[in-house]
Image (cartoon, rainbow, N blue to C red):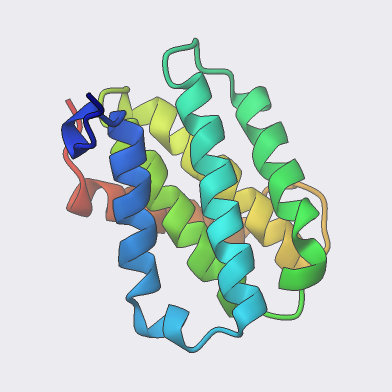
Length: 153
């Protein structure tokens, strides 16, 4: 006898479903082209699968940054002409990261948020991953958002 219930699914699958569903109901998503909708869903799915795979492993910033860098650059052709689109994808990835890693120390989550933001910023500006005042300000804003929106153990 087969059982099909939410309770039998892995927690991250439920989280992924809810994250994508919430994103797809935003006003922003409904205004995207069909191609952009497809790309955004692909990015979120690939990213979340990777995040789950490293969830129980020792966190390594370089490994995470390398993955985010490769993932975002793989979609660069589709995304480069729409910076606002890329910013929205970044927000979804950050949100998913925060939810998945609520049990980690704040410092580790901030490192991951920083990796995502710096990668996206580099795509906007066609630059290397150097830190400038604008990026530092972005990180400060992310820190405030995390503290205001999420509860960590």
